[in-house]
Length: 104
Image (cartoon, rainbow, N blue to C red; front, top):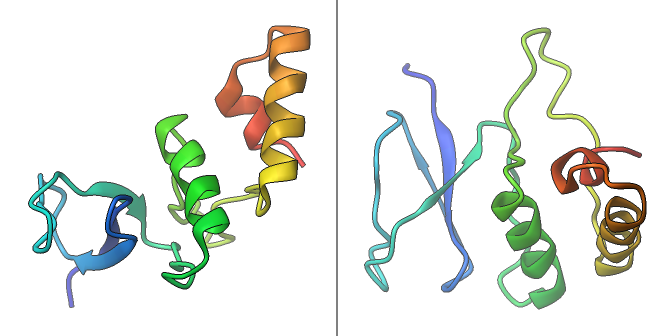
């Protein structure tokens, strides 16, 4: 079976598994899907805060791909409070947002 990765539509709050890395569109709204990675687990559709956190992570360039050793994607914030703290730290210290968001 080919390797499958998750793609998400942040507007519709939907996740899809596809086997090839290429541009996919949401079947509902026709917008481009974002690659989330093979270790991604979608939050419930009604959990708007979790989808907002996911939006910040994906737009910062982070994804949920497995590491080469199979140990998972590493730390990712789960709440809006954690995201705000890490982004404030990034602004205060000059650390890139993607690095601040991936730091526990």
